[in-house]
Image (tube, rainbow, N blue to C red; front, side):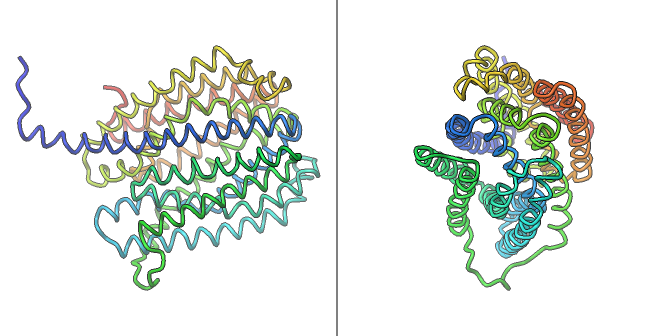
Length: 441
């Protein structure tokens, strides 16, 4: 018969259990928010696709991709810094340092956002005509320039809220308020007629609504009207931490938006719209995965800061099991009914059924590698993270250029499968070698 655990073992197990409960509760709230967000985005995409058609919808998607890429340039890695330093400093009870961190993150982030949005506004003509040979893209990019600072503000404020471990409140703004406002406006205006410019304005207004809510939430967690001089600003430390994350964030935005851009350059605007809807349909499988990884970040920051190897390993293995298990049902649905799912958007989008099946396999492979990337993000291994991002973007870009140039839409789907699988396996190996942790017990 197995001996009963000693008091010391029970005491040691309690922090690990509490951390798992925190991650599970936070992940559950974020998953619920992500699921609601997915459904809202799915319905909004459905309305937009049917109202605009494949060609105009593809132009709208291309503009959104360029907007997110520009926002990534202005982010400066401060969202990751806010999430990590707010979590760590709050745990230490250092209120002045928390206030100083907020001053640096929000102040510098907004200024940088205004700078890059100005460049996008005045460079819209050159981007549209010289790169994509489509002057109808110009007004969309000029509208998008006003959206860029709003996107950056949303990211920074949401990271602050998550740093305080208020996952439900972060989900409220990002995954409920923003998609609800967007869906409602799209549905109402679609009655009288939609075009890509109006769709982009709605996109920006929905994020502005999230910013207003997030400002109120942050103010409740830590007053924003305190005297500036009372903040303890660790500028050099935050800058040193943020720069690799900024570089990694820019590379991440390139990786995330490379397909629409390359398809716009080498294929057709219609294929841009189709691949976007393929990715939208695949969002169902990513909700629990992304929610768990996001919820895990502040808790991992604490356990890694304390040097608690056992709790970190326990969190790593448990969350890896969660994300893989949660992905399987969505995987089966997408593989069995790809045509039926895409036909909801219109007959012209059914051509993406094969691409959807391929992309779904990529998501399953990614979830099987667990939360290894989150471990690297929160461990302070900035050099490793930077090298990973360089490899990720370089490999993804190379695979996409090669495959899209030869096979167009199907090539884009295969590029997702190959690049995501290889990159995630590399991260698992790195965590094993550097941190001595493995995702499965």
